[in-house]
Each structure stands twice: as structure tokens, then as C-alpha cells.
Amino acid sequence: MGWVDGIKIIKLTKTRSFMGLIIKSNIRKTVKELDKTQEITSVADEVEQALERKTEEILRDAIKRAKANGRRTLQARDL
Figure 1 (cartoon, rainbow, N blue to C red):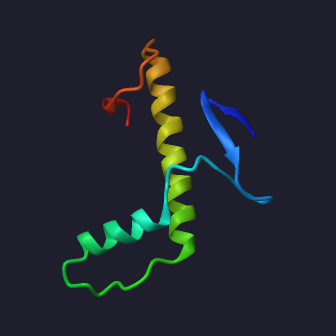
Figure 2: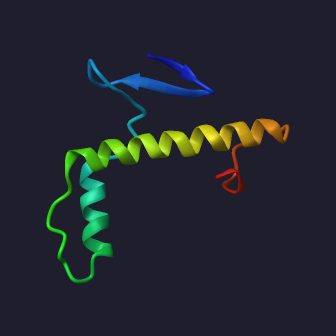
């Protein structure tokens, strides 16, 4: 698909571009681990998409911060 601020964006569907970092089965597994009372029984598809967008936003901001600080290495403090 292309590059955005040094991040390769891959096209998975005709309508959306995703980086492929977020995997729905991992979301479900994590929700089960975090929800001690087991009240949440499923995860909607839109959660995966929203989490993917939020992750992209966080990484873009972190890349800008690292560049502004003259670094080529993305570090945890950039997040």
C-alpha cells in the first residue's frame, strides 16, 4: 500500500488500510484475562478496528516525537 511517517501500511480490504498489529483472537484472550468476573462474553468487530486506529495514532505521534528530538530510534518514552 505505502508508507506513512516511516510505517508501512498494508491493504487488507478494499475499504480500509490496517497495519495488522491487532489480532481479534488476542483481544478476546486479553479481555477474558482482564475481566475477572467474566461478564464480557464477546468482542465486537468494531473493537478490533478502533484499537487498530488508536494504535496507528499512538505510533504516528511517537514517531513525530522521536523525529522532533533528533532520534532515529523509537523509544517507550515517545509513546
